[in-house]
Image (cartoon, rainbow, N blue to C red; front, top):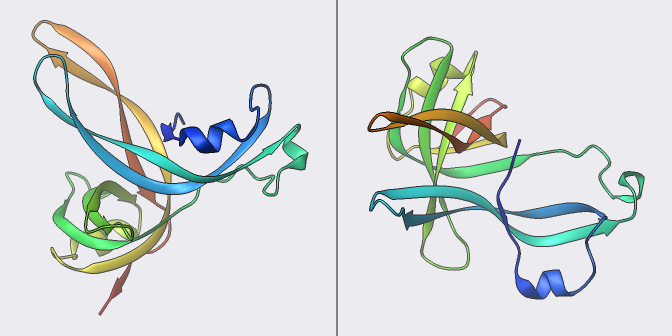
Length: 162
């Protein structure tokens, strides 16, 4: 997977990273923009809060290269599924630093599909997942471009909180 990241200039200036192994820790954030053709878009990225730098993979604290995300948020859009094997839903995750929220597109597979389809807007949920990228075709007039979508694949059972 290709994962877009945002790293503060101060964090990067602390050390030389070229040719090194880097372990990143951060939070998913969304940002909106306007494309050159005037269309609005929303992107996801990882806002890096800490990083560990090593000369080799074995020197990192976490050798597994895990891509783990913990989602604790609220359903803002009913789950949608056109098959029984996959469902998509949007989760709002509040930022602790201010009164904003990030709207994270998520999807589930397998046993979680039935559970996700029962969720209602406003339900408070928690789940683990992984950040992922996937290519998709975008038709613009007579031209088809390949673009990249970023979303979260929820891998653990979606737990609904009271």
